[in-house]
Image (cartoon, rainbow, N blue to C red; front, side):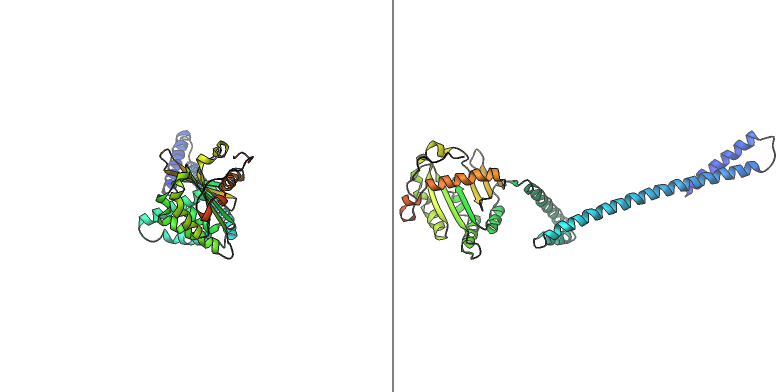
Length: 304
């Protein structure tokens, strides 16, 4: 306001001086009236410009609010579809946690939300990857399975996993899925070793898992024809014949990444490969439930 009045006074003064210079020979109050009139016009113009700017700011604010309301409405409609899931509960508790506790907790909560959002975005492409071996994914997929779990393990005797706490939870979850009267899923596990001499080392592991209701077989690569050995030879699990959990190792045989894949054209070759190798390790040649020799069918199809 002070700036507007100052501009008005300056303009009025300038007009008054100009009228005095240009009309020095004329007498009358018209110089004063003209300066006051010009100053008033300038003041009114300033108020109009300010008003227009404020109206534009209000319009932008209203447009932004309506856009936010539109986004919120769309998000609410999407969340409504997931009312029975944990999305509403996630939103409710996420808003609470950022208002309590230390700053490090707030930062951690935001980081977890960002990680989950990125993971959901990956799932829209039907594939997601994470560093290392993700035991949380493994447990969740086991609990979500409704039909079958087919797993291939290429490790000779992976004591670093099967004797660990995550392995115990994983096997327990599989047993619960097998015994669940509403699910009764089928679990098959195929161990792939390099030589038949390694069968005996897998005995205790196979016995334990068979006792839990898991169908276990063992196959030796040395006894397979070359065309059986072609293709991917990685640890993978096929859940419900529709999604794969793949473990990728680096040059040092360390599990470097895990991939979840639900793309049908990439899941189907692994599913067929599992069935091919599973049939090669026929249990008829494994008396008393122990790993035995491999019977290879002649004339079988080429693996993927």
